[in-house]
Length: 624
Figure 1: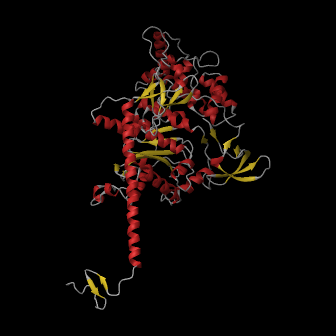
Figure 2: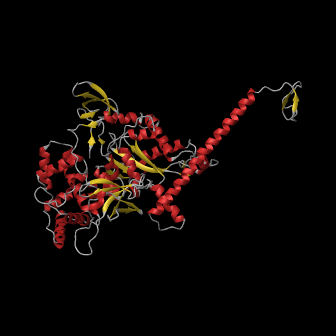
Figure 3: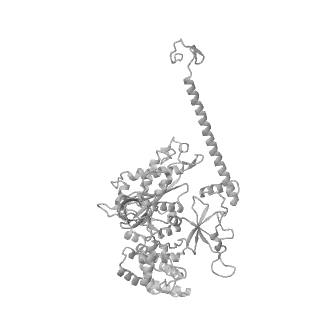
């Protein structure tokens, strides 16, 4: 994982010159000492880059979705072995002890350490293709699966079988499968790496596991630093938004939000008309991890949002979108631990739920609000008063977060979230600071890792997703590729493809040999880009017309018609505005002209001629 760090003494580049980070000034600024002149200068963190000699090697990063479950489990086991060493670098005695207890050689342990420290990604510990022999893993994927299944079936059960019985069962299954059984130390090592909570849960039950390892039911675990625990949740927003073109009501959006429990800072959010799902949750996590300067510039919002970095734990409820395989593996890749809220313990999600409630109350003062219940809404026409588009409510919320919520005294903290977060970064009288978190440089990989994927074969015409064809020369060598085997029953190879829902004009193809993602455009590059929501609208319209089967030509014809209608509406709106402006200017001109004209000395016409010499009293002809 390419990152840039900001520890005191680190070397960085700024405007082509080398600096040493000398002092922290704020969450956005550091003082750097220029290498040649030794001058001290104030540097913006967002404009710093890694020195050439400090940049990590451009190692190929495997697609986390492509690895089979056995290899992924093996990578997780390797990480658990080296994990204690990562916090005690240079402790050769500890490395020796871990090598002996794990049954692996010193060379192997150091190789794993080098691989992981080069990227800080779990996927760096995946076994290489055709791995085996000296200095390599001595276990095949088949044996790994046997060991894992025996542990699940024999060890993690209420029967509480001994390690020796587990080993005997592994021997039997390996013999039946024609595999060479592993050493008994390997089995003992695998069992020793099982999470304590999981061990007690499997052998003694949930009640005992919760009593031993769950926090007290009346409070959330005490936290001592930022990014240690982040809570994430969704809610439907108490406001109706309008479309960008016609300004017509299109419904209530959903929001997914992430809060840093230590400081109550909002780390990120995602707003969409789609119900909560893995995609929205992944985009929220990415927003929380990434720096926000470009985000604020895009929305044209003035202010500071100095939150970025990988969190240690994500705390979520038991909704299905949090338990998807894609999201689970992406979190494992970045060493993010996912914890689910215990059932019937609402206090565990109290921080994020109160935050969402606070923001919903603020929405109640905006036009188009639905309030929080029908009684409050009685007599108020939400749809009629709706004026905010999705992007406008996104801008409003961002402004409120960084300029109001983050700067307001928090009742529980007795300080502002911004000040609390700053204390956690730089330290205070009560706590030691963690320092400015590293920034991820490869943001594209981060986004792709948290995106769902589809598997497709590559044909002569390229790849088809949702009846739309995509092609690029990089796909040529994979056309009609098949899995190893022989005869007519050979299965065609399926490859990993990802797609950003905001623009489906391109796919991201993972080349399994080059271990890199490549952009694959429409086969017909003259086609216009569109979002998945526009695509879904087109499909729904085609179905309403009785066209349950549709092809690419029909999709883009319908898209062009929608755009034509949209452009006509825009032109009519512009023309109406021009006409209204002309009429207004004419009216104003007439009024000014009337004011300049002097009345004739004889008469003024007011419901007929009136003699100027006659005394007129206001309303004298009206009966009261």
